[in-house]
Image (cartoon, rainbow over all chains, first blue to last red; front, side, top):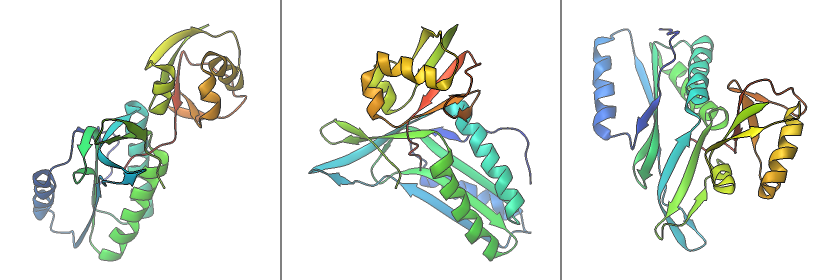
Length: 147
Length: 77
């Protein structure tokens, strides 16, 4: 299902397990789907120079980021045989162990969702202007760099 | 011309502001980088891209928008 309207992908704070579960439940009505694939990005408590990351604070150039997410959606529907896809990314503080990115792709068949999900997540990491500030337990910070 | 320059992520740490209006007398993105690096010498050591109308522009492209956004490396996900 293509959708020309630019959606707001951002959610304030972490993405809850309930939200993810509800999202899955909503797809029970779409019985042409045979395979879902889900990516969940979780904040890691990295240890850097003896200090532990306690949270990431996300900011974004929201207008451009939502435009980029829209372009990624369009490109993904062009490349893969998907029934639907959903992307949510956190803004603000997400503590270690909480979910900051939720990508959900669905298709009649499984092979498409494996390829599509990897494409979407990899493209988000390189193309979307989102910035993560890694906050340590002592409240100092450093800016995250995607590897 | 007066342009609004917005800073994100580590760039806002360097400039100590999220956005500001500057009187830009140059023409291209390279001219603008020179002005901003003069204002904030730490920018020289930092990797960033420039967006105008939500599109990333290259060196020596003409600055025509009245809002310019400086973007550090992306780190979503």
